[in-house]
Image (cartoon, rainbow, N blue to C red; front, side):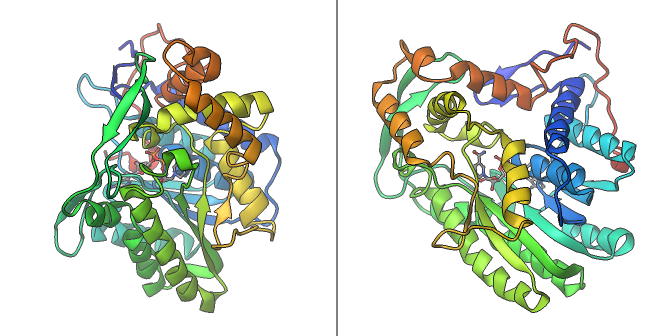
Length: 398
Ligand code: NAD
């Protein structure tokens, strides 16, 4: 079939297999271009490994550190006349590239929140790797089924206390208007914490520890975001921020649990970037468009792969994690630089539909979004017939 983008709001319902493979290849080239990561991890589990920050973490570990990687994700292969999801195609491409270099890579497609998935991955680690020495937790999900009670929690992106009104960008039309987000009510905060908080990260580490699958010196990292004050009502001080606070609570618990093994748990605060998860957050796409313009002009713009490469190379594995006062790793440091934030804030006040392309990098936002789904990659013939049926080699039965 000929595969073209089909965008519905902040979702693209199609994905291009060769484009996704080209996107993965570009990320591999970035990491390889920086040389080997000295003292990097060798057996890495990435939970949420198919897109965004988790995919780039897996690529940095595999191609920067020659690590064997296991990846867990929730994606769909092609069926009948529908193409598969981007994360499916990314994982297929990653496994093929790993195999070409003799690197072990095995994937698991299903619900990472479930006990069954944890048991399956633990059994695979025991059989294939013995132990892991790095565990990346990079899930972003709108819902979670509690493995013990079967209750389904839904996360919401709301402010807490007051309704929140601010500028907002329609990322399809380029219109800048205003959005008012109602405050959380009922169990919204509790449910969002249940989905995006730290409980499941702890359950993973507990499951691995119980079977002695964590090697001495292991580091585990979960990702967070803080951002500038203008987004705090919807992010840091909103329902998602409450969940991220819970991730920090769990980080301290896990740090204590890993200490006897000489291990360490971290929260890494990453940069705001276009991913499937972030494009769903109101207000944030306009902020990202303004930020990209400033950081590209300054020469400090990074995408997920540069961020994750820097996290591994210059924080986790060089002996200088440079934690902040709360013990978090900050690879959002260039985003949060005062000069960058001052310019973004100044432009935030001025930006409108009329001056969007002058003040913000809306083209960059849109092209980054399309690239997530394998569209707009150099060297891909988008007019050609493309077979959407692509196997993830380690998941051949699906
Ligand atoms: P993403 O949507 O690109 O990736 C989410 C991953 O989770 C995918 O691999 C998906 O398959 C997997 N997943 C979702 N539900 C699952 C389930 N039930 N079982 C198994 N896998 C499942 O998101 P992202 O933006 O890369 O976010 C990853 C983490 O990084 C999140 O904690 C997010 O808050 C954080 N973060 C994101 C940004 C940003 O700007 N995008 C910035 C800082 C931190």
